[in-house]
Length: 158
Image (spheres, rainbow, N blue to C red):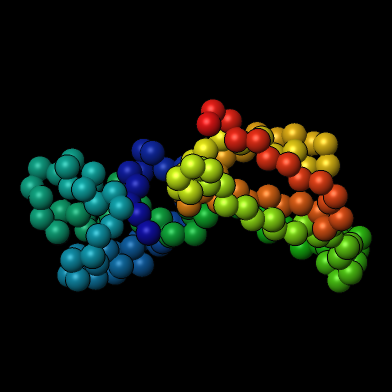
């Protein structure tokens, strides 16, 4: 709920405003319980004497209105859930997915046997070349189809 100056009130807000009596009761209770109300600071800023009775008097006169929270929700239509039968059928019977086998290689320096950490290399899998980089342990991860016939690796810059 929020307080709105009557001069700035829209037609939509008027439809969703509390009656004067309801507004007085709700604001009075909120003031007693020290609960925040949107717009209350603006209302108090325009008062000569900033006391609760002056706030309530503004509501009684109709200078300020208390608007229900649902006014801020808008008049949005609720979408109707529809499911395409093709999508449902695919969910029930998903198509076979191509499987890829992980191939893991540790690349090391041939002289020191130290792992080649973050080292660029070219992996050629069945004639398809791709530039990659090893991880922090010198491991080269290749995910290839199970029926792959040839893998070669060339380290760059060593």
